[in-house]
Image (cartoon, rainbow, N blue to C red):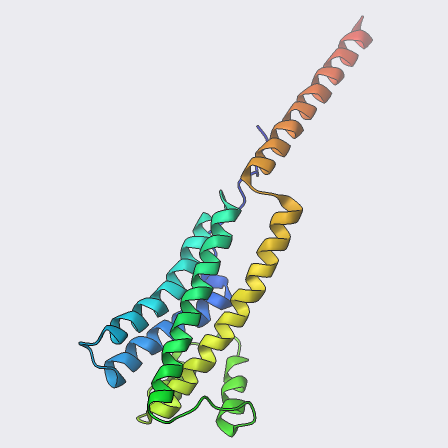
Length: 199
């Protein structure tokens, strides 16, 4: 059978969405330890939502080779988990009489600039994430979540387009079988031609 009907998978570490989700997860763990009561359900739910956002990108990427449907489903779960996490941060701000920074806020502009830095890591955002001011810390993490969600939305559109154009594993297997049969037919024809020429 022709090689190549199972494409490479598991390259999640190269995905910008994963890189940002990992920062948002680490930031949320730090934030919750500092500003959210460890005994509260909210603490666990926020950490789990952040983890789900990261881990489902990993699982989706690993499943990509054999199931595009699973990749799409898990990427969408990651997106939904981050939306849940975003709501928790909004609740945190609202309950303290604080607000998400508007786009024109000076700190919001600085955060956008940091998010454009190639290969940004937790260290890139550390000063904001670990600020003693919960308003700053929450808003920095909200910015990270928004960027990650935008990247996942774009990723989902690309996955949908690729699925429509290329199909899933069954379609690739069918194409591979047909290609192999065609190759064998061509080989038999060539062998028959050679045999006739030898007569």
